[in-house]
Length: 389
Ligand code: SF4
Image 1: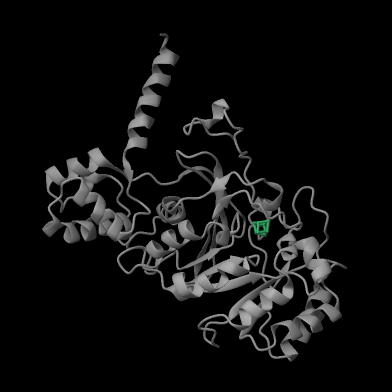
Image 2: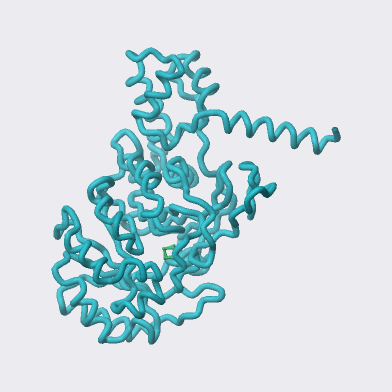
């Protein structure tokens, strides 16, 4: 074998060893405890061990078992042999002139995905992706032009936050920040989170756990295009806040903008929201409404919107459209957005106009997309170590 072939063989062996290890990130405390017991750790020590490991990983951001110095040497070797702390690695980072950061990430699984960090005076928000690509083809959304490659796994959900915290050096040791840089999460990146419910839930459980990343559930918002059968599960099983990508006030227009509407119409969606568990003024549902010139921005639309949300404690975010290469829509004018917003405000609804962030790096709402494609059956690309981009 020549040198290149030797190196390839070496890399393959390394990645196979990595693949055989249990992925630690994304495992709940119970799942980690079970794995430790199966591998021979004495039951009496397991609960303490789990807490120690979680503290290293999620409080200190330490991914090297050798550095987990309050664990015995034998236990560190045992962890090293059996577990990996694999998390997304940053392939590319772009920083907008307004400070927004867009990351292209990958793991040993197929495909690359994007995550965004949006800094503000009073908060730092991570916009997480839940899938690579999307099945839903919303016509105003750049991600919708990318076919679904796959669902992200729990270690990739929580790993997006870890990768960004690392990049920002947002760990407790870093005393130069007196506050957390990552304070809020929105699941509004690539994909429909309610079509990947279990993985999203498992990742968020760790993000919210007080021994995990310890973010309050009220600082986390999951946004769905309207997968009605799973909407109540957000309140009952996850507990974070809910946002709905509404974007239209009639079925005819919504069928065009958000085609999932053909499956679950506006009437069905609104009925489910009126019965949403734990609905209250302190936990309002956010409606996302992208403002598209001459498509959904008439004053009649604003009046219909008021009627639709009647009876639901709601906030309506108006989003100026962020064009992307090949998009067929134009943004509404600022005057039209203002008139639209006034109608909502007069009816008693908070209706802030969202300030576009990261437009110059295609990081704004609806602009995310990676070049990854789904491998064909029986192709060479079925090799999980092969990344297509
Ligand atoms: S808006 Fe959301 S659900 Fe619709 S295509 Fe884009 S990523 Fe998918």
